[in-house]
Length: 476
Image (cartoon, rainbow, N blue to C red):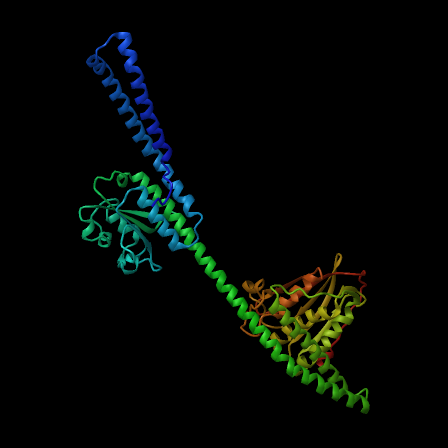
């Protein structure tokens, strides 16, 4: 069965047409010479025979030269073109063995590849050997030497070689040739051919070297592609597991949240009937507000689990920056009071207006304040500040914690990245997505051991006025 169209078909056809033309010329000239020169048959044969022999010898020599030159280009080119369409490593090795075996008229062909540790050659594909030979063939151990050293010590393109162990008595007397499969100037495998001693094709070292380079690079690229595809499938599986986990956690959180909000609502009604200005009433309101925001976060978790990107719909409104900051601070105050942490709010212009989705932007500030509260030590200091920068207003949340390492400053905004292995690693990622949806920017400024400042830049809606407000409510 024909495996592949012969790349030298045109040369072979040209030779046949040359022979036909020579035969036609001889057949035409014979009667012409006989009539014009009045030659006898023996004289005619004497005159035409040298010319015919010379023409045939010239055709044969020219065709042989053309074969050699053309095959050094055509075979590697055709092999590379064929392998470019195959993305399965073993299939590409098998196709390579078949094509080389047919083109070079080899009795048997084996393609072997280096093991992961580089200590052995594993047979991957074969041609001309019994079915199932690859599965039962032994590995060729390289010992302490590299493949390059082994090939050099084995006198390339010559026998004997340790690789001859793959070919037993049926190939006694055959020439065993092994060709390094090079990728980026490094041998990654070996092409082994068993051919009759009279086979001149396996003696063409330039042809074999070209085939080794093309095959080695193509097979190595195929193996790398296969590895990347497996990695992509693994990442898809991890993403699916992440989505399933987030969905499960989100649903599990809804039930206790509902109970908390119902109980807090009942407590609020009772406190309002007793004393509308009591401290307990304010605390219960904070519980309800925090539980409500936690419910929004649970909804966001569900959205994150269903979508590759977190892009909620925003309901934009122009609001005073001070109101948004104070609302977020009121949510975090109980946590900071428990650690005796001190909070200052210093706004260059409390009258500054920003166009935001109030609920979502409060969520950004709460995430930043929550991080600051977590990483600041007991009795530490936290500062919320703002300043004008051209047409932007920059809000900063400064903590007194250990700071963020330089290598982590870009990574902490990636989903599920946890620099200290705590939490889910979603807080800053969600904050970054929300800030970017507001056409803003978020970044961190930090020095090791001297705290961090998380900055958010938003377009300002009004010119700031020089004024400063200081609040130490969290220390009360």
